[in-house]
Length: 341
Ligand code: KG4
Ligand code: ZN
Image (cartoon, rainbow, N blue to C red):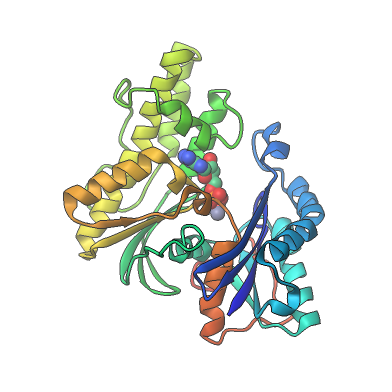
């Protein structure tokens, strides 16, 4: 079954075609990061307008990459939330129009369910899928969310913990802004940290009580602001050391809570997903923790960690196969709890 996926929840316009939830026949992403960079964050109205402009070219590029016309598509999946409502509506309306005109089955997908399904896709064309079995622990770390889930089956989740304030990606982005590194800053901090010493500066460890599975990152951001007020903006090696130390603090919190979730649930497999799962230090430290504690770690390739439509098509495939169908009244929802799409 070939599913066309569409995604426009934030600042990426994306379309993909995925066969049977694993084989990626096309995966096209148009990022607006450059447009929003000068504002230091996503401007909702601008995002919606650019989705309107980009959606058709991105869709056409995806169909061309897959070597298919719309008559070769068996179903349409679209992100219906959570996200910026004006941005979400662009892909939702396009998906409804196509499904209605072509009499194709349609399904609405929760954006986070998309992230949690990315690990079930072929990492690259023809490469075998290496995915966790059920149940497993999922650390979902993006720009808007940071949560630990017990994934009991396809589409079945139990939240074990979540951030009480900022998401991990938001912390990366806000600290990058304080350091004058532009938006989005996670990937820039990751790159600068590669030549830094993660133990150069010791940052506080938020919510370090062992049994606690919640996160908190706003204190780290405040700590960084206070440090910068006292020391000024570092450059060169000092900047690399500061980036590495901040990144280490965030990653230590993410990894230690994941270890604790594994201990409490007794499962042997972990997946990491969402934009921050592209972080090289998080990927390496989680692997080290898995080796030490005896759990297996699954992470999609970096390109599939950040927003894309292949993950939406894959999540949609499982829902379509289970018989789920959305009507022409499908709507975008800015705040959508996981498990409701
Ligand atoms: O999943 P995503 O693309 O969008 C949301 O659903 O939020 O995640 C975007 C977030 C941004 O905060 C971005 O700075 C962060 O992921 N990010 C990274 C890296 N690449 C993207 N954070 C740390 N290290 C990276 N390499
Ligand atoms: Zn996302």
